[in-house]
Image 1 (tube, rainbow, N blue to C red):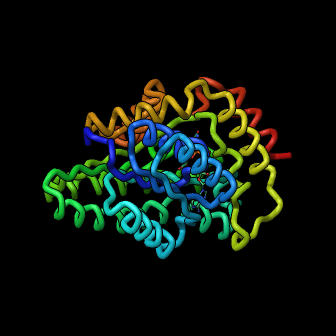
Image 2 (tube, rainbow, N blue to C red):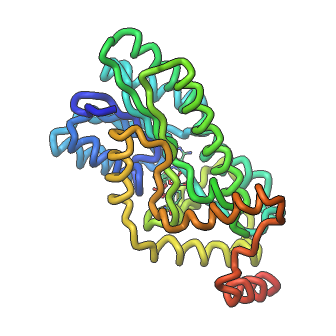
Length: 299
Ligand SMILES: NC(=O)c1ccc[n+]([C@@H]2O[C@H](COP(=O)([O-])OP(=O)(O)OC[C@H]3O[C@@H](n4cnc5c(N)ncnc54)[C@H](O)[C@@H]3O)[C@@H](O)[C@H]2O)c1
């Protein structure tokens, strides 16, 4: 996709972090914007800020776990702007702790947002975009799914999140292959950030009322502290990641990484798989962190 002006972008998780930065860049490029999130005050603040700058922008409360709400988002985009060209299936939440200590509600919430949100977005918007392409001989579209480096690695105490993000990488590669097969004018990218300062480690702020919480276990408390530290001390900004994402869309680049240096860990994992070895020690260079983790989890 090379042209953005007057084209329509739909962004989930648009009230904060990467989603908000996608919206700011989209507005700067003259796109018409459809913003979605569950946090209505922050969503409205983003909408108002961009509208004040002259952007054509609407915002809808949309919980991406629910197909009918994602369908309503697509309907609103068509009603207001008549087409959809660029979709960011970006909304996401995190949760940590030893994998067997997560409750069924934790699993359903994280997979509901991170995986089902992307499934609904891909199913509903790809069909819609293929229809839009039939109406417009010059149509160009692109879908960006936000996964994570956790979709390519399996760090301890992040199991539920890892599972959700591995599935998003698989879904995105499958979408890419299927769109190539039918020669659709729709590109695909998967965004795999490492730790970047956003609201992600505070995801529980938007944990919905229908997802009961329980008192955190020791491993969940340690995972929360580690995630807070890793996210807040990240040096690459959400704005830089969003700028690189738009560049990747123009270049038709599928994999988008915020920290390409971390890919050596992915290479190690692939080597273990191909070499039929057991998963390697993620703390081989930092054994003091493993010792600290073990001690705190046992307390
Ligand atoms: N920041 C990082 O370090 C990092 C690393 C890897 C991947 N990611 C991924 O990036 C994406 C964006 O997260 P972020 O880092 O900008 O965090 P963020 O918390 O700043 O933004 C996520 C947004 O998603 C919204 N959201 C949560 N549940 C929702 C739901 N059910 N329906 C609609 N919106 C919902 C939140 O309200 C929030 O505004 C997520 O998919 C996340 O997993 C982030």
